Image (cartoon, rainbow, N blue to C red; front, side, top):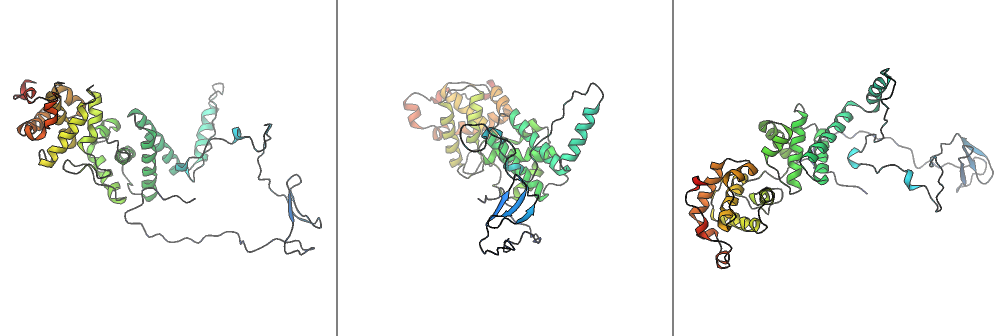
Length: 350
C-alpha cells in the first residue's frame, strides 16, 4: 500500500530521474534436458541446490536459505511470533533499526569505550546519526512539555522532511526542532505560544520565528494565530484554544471556560480588542469572566499562568468592561450565574 508523503512541498523541486536497474522478469529458468515450458524447479535448502523436479538435474548450488533460522516449539503451526523483534518504525524508513549494545564491563581497561566508539562510527552515517539524535531530542522535549506521542510523531515527520529537502541548512538544530514542535502542536490542535516553546527549548524568539516562517512557506502550512481570525479555520490558534489550559492551571470551575469562550466570540464579532495577541485576549477574558461569575482571580495569578503583564490583562478588561452589556447574555443574568455589579470599576485595586 502506498502512503501519501507527509508535508508535501508547496512548490515541488524538479529532480532528474535516475535510471533504475533490476532483474529481467521476462527471463525464465527451465531445465536444459527436459525443456519443459512449465518447469518444476525445486529449491532444496537442506543441501543448498536448485534441482529439476522432473529429471533430477542440478541447476544451481549454494542457494541461500531465506527462511527463519530458528526453530519453534509452539503447539500451533507457523513461526514463533515472540521472536520476530519489535515493530518497524515508518519514520526510520531506509535506516538500520537494529542496534548493537556493548557492555561497559571491561575490567577498567578502556576497551569497551573504544569498541563503542568504533561501533557508533561504523553503524550509521553522519546524517543518520544526526537524525536519530534529533528524534531523541524531540521525544525528550515533548515529554518535558507533557505532549502526547501524536505531536512527537508529527514533529519527527516534519523534521525528517525538512532534513531531506535541506530547507534549514545552517540553522541551529535546537531552533529547527523547536519550530517543528511548534507546528506539530498547531497541527494537532494543542497550541503552544512562542514564549512557551522558547522557555522549553531555550531558543531565541527571533531564530524560532525564522525557522517557522521557512517551514510555513516551504510546506504551505496554515498561517499563524491571529486574534481577529475565525477559530474554525484549521491550524489557526485563537484565544479560545488557550482557555482550557489556563483555566485548569488557575483551578477554576468547569462553567467558567464555556462562558469565557462565548464572551471572546461575541467581542470578536463586535471588533473589540482587535489586533491583540490571543494570549492577551485570553488573559483579559478570564479576568473579566472570573469577576462576572464571582470566582475572583487576581491579575497577578492570571499573569503568571498566561505569561503576559498585569497591565495588558487589565487593558483588555477595560475594553470588555466598556461594552459589558453587549457581551453578557440575558440568560446568565436571569439564572443568577452572572452579575454586572461584581465587575470592578477600578482595576488597579486588584
